[in-house]
Structure formats: C-alpha cells, structure tokens
Amino acid sequence: MGKLARIGVTLLVVAAAVFAGTWVWDHYLYSPWTRDGRIRADVITIAPDVSGWVTGLSVKNNLAVNKGDPLFTIDDTRYQAKFAESNARLAQERTGWDLARHQYERHQRMADLQSVSEESLEAYRIRAEAAKASYQLAQAELDTARIDMERTKVLAPESGIVNNLTLRRGNYVSRGAPVLSLIKSDSFYVTGYFEETKLQLVRVGQKARITLLSGGEKLSGEVVSIARGIADSNTSSDNQMLPQVEQAFNWVRLAQRIPVDITLDTLPDDVNISAGMTVSIYLETDMEKELEEE
Image (cartoon, rainbow, N blue to C red; front, top):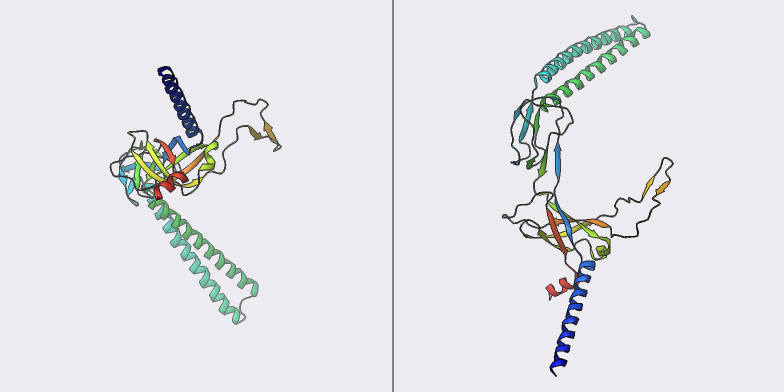
C-alpha cells in the first residue's frame, strides 16, 4: 500500500506540474497581456517665430507653466525699427494714394465738361489704382512687422511642464529651430505593444490594468485604438516602384507587435509618471468581466 501511495502521489504531482505548465504556457502565449508598454504624452516642440538674441528667460527646467505664460524674450530692437519704418512707409503710401485719387476725381469732373480726353482719364485712374495697391502692400508689411515684434515674446501655447531646457540668456535662436519642449498637462496615456497572436483578444473599450515598473503602482485604463499597420522590413520599392523582396528568409518566425493605445483613468496624486516609463499591461477578458458582474 505504501508503494502504491507513493506512486499515486508522484502521479498527482506530475499531473499538477503538467497542468500548471500548460496553464502558464497558454497564459503567456494567448492571454491579452504584455510587458512591453510605455507611458506617453503630448509633447509640444517650442520654436521661435523670429530670430535674435535671447534677452530674458522666464522659466526653469521641469517646472509647470500655464497657457499664455512667458517662456523667453528675444531682443526686439531690430523689429521695433522695422515696425517704425513700415509705419512711415504706410503714411507715405497713404499720401500718394490720396494724391492720385484726388487727381483722378478732378480729371473725371473735367471729363464731364469734355476738357480731358478718355485716354488721359484712364491713365489717371490706373495711377490711382496702383497707388491704392501700394498702400495695401505697405499695410500688409506693417502688419507683418507688428506680428514679428509681438512674437519676440515667446509664450506657452498650452499648460504643461517645461522639458529639456538648455536655453540660456545670450544665446542666439533661429526662426523655426526648436529650443525646448513642453509636455502638455493631463495628456498622459499608455501604448502597449501586443504580439499578433494576442491581437484577436484586444478590442476598443476593453478595460486595462497597468503596472508601473518603478515601484509596481497599479493604474487602470481603457483601450481607445488599435494600430492598423506597421512597417514591413521585408520589402521596399525601387525607382520603378517594383517591390524589392529580400532573398534570404528567416525560418525563425517571431510574432509582430502591434501598438495599442490606452487612455488612463484618474491618476492618483501620489503617483508620479513620466513619458517613456515602462509598464506592464493586462487586459480584462470576457470571462473576468462576467465574473465581476456576478
């Protein structure tokens, strides 16, 4: 009896190990979870719209700013001079237009008395129209000069956190060249990369449990979108738009990973997250949802 009992216990242990191994294998391969997740956020690149020397810096790195707060100031001496020049030119062109219009109106009255030929009257009309166009061009140049002068003060386009601030007073900045970034407030979300073997278990609206690698804090969220395409490294097009297929075939077939975006629920006050952090994601299955409802 003792020998049979030992055999029975051994068989039970082996069966339990096989069952546990099978469950772990199926869970690893086919359950909707992944360890390859990243915290992401909306990152705004700040670039000045005018060039010049930085004369003032109003923010510090990693500090919060509100929409409309000043970030830095560019020397506006040249832009003030340009504005004054454009304003003077506008006044000059306005005088020229008034003169040309007055001459045209005077010759128009003379034409009614048949004192001026039609060709001469047409010439004065064209001069008045040209003077008007010159005035409108000067007005546009003045508006552009005003915009350039106003944009020497760079303001925060959204509320957020200043990031990667290496700008210093006295630096020269160029128009359109990024100088810092702004992480928009309340824009954090999660992107999980799920293997294609698990993608049939992922759907929009599915609840997600998220675990941060830093400390293991638990977060919750909901699937909002599933990517419908990723780059194919096996093929590319040549100059004739014909596909170039690699001659070598890798017999080790690895499952492709598809990005899935997840919006975060209310973030606890004591949890600090940063874009780029690593997370693990587990999606709620239909069976788990039914058990919770019961």
